[in-house]
Image (cartoon, rainbow over all chains, first blue to last red; front, side, top):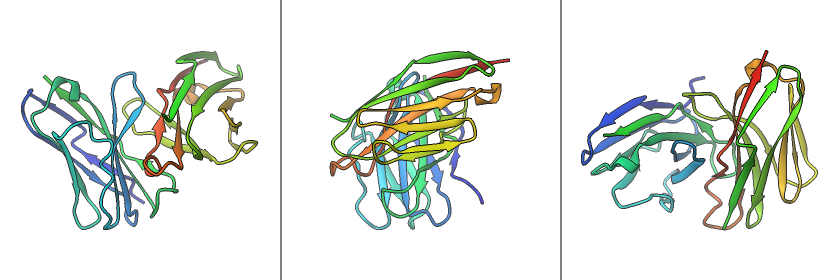
Length: 114
Length: 113
């Protein structure tokens, strides 16, 4: 079946602009995660959604970052007033219900802030 | 603080030359250690999950092992198609960490013919 998809694959923006990144999880996966991968760094957890529960936002680096998940499926990560340090690959993953299942990753969105 | 350290950062092997990658971890109650493979421009691809010391799992030329402080990914007779970055991650039982994976920076493996 189809895997996790993300769009756009690449995004170039100017400092100060807002961007939206989209994630379509695997059908039937109720858990959805966002991670950030900076050059030469490990993946950094951003946010976790599970069903209708309140999301775990503990990894969001600042209040410029927000995410929502509509209808328990598609998720959007929004970065307001982008800064150059926001440049990274943003990865989305999904898994079956509960945090104990393997996470399957999408191809990522490469964000470049000029 | 939960932490994962991978070594070496980069490894170059000749085809057929077996070796091991290391993942050292410090975690508040291990609830799983994960190995992923990542090819350039792609998301990580799941390989293994290990839960308790002494556990081993194998897949083709890869074998993952786990102790109380570290995990090894053994690569036997590697081929050029095994070239990738290998990522190690842990999940802890600490309530704040249970939902997320803590990743190491990865080991870049290059296998040359």
